[in-house]
Image 1 (tube, rainbow, N blue to C red):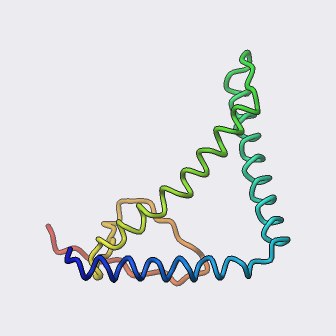
Image 2 (image 1 turned 180 degrees about the horizontal axis):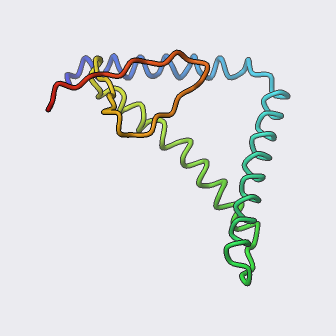
Length: 125
């Protein structure tokens, strides 16, 4: 990478950082806090459901909710931070004209609200 590109990239990053923190002050913290509380409640409800699944699978074992809930929240947080960059990097490496075709042997999942797409015929024999 040429030094000029590195300098312009660093300058662009610095400009974006200043803009981000400038926009951060425009957040209304009441609704944002409420949204975070709802998100935490949803994740803890999912952890409680997994605790019930584990209790049903292992009836004689005590499943502490605090450890399970903490592990679930940590896993959800890591997934939220680590998975999106991986997905984006894979999408950027895909060719623009890439398509996924089915040979008709796989089960089809269709949304009844969408029109059915015609099958792609294969010339391979």
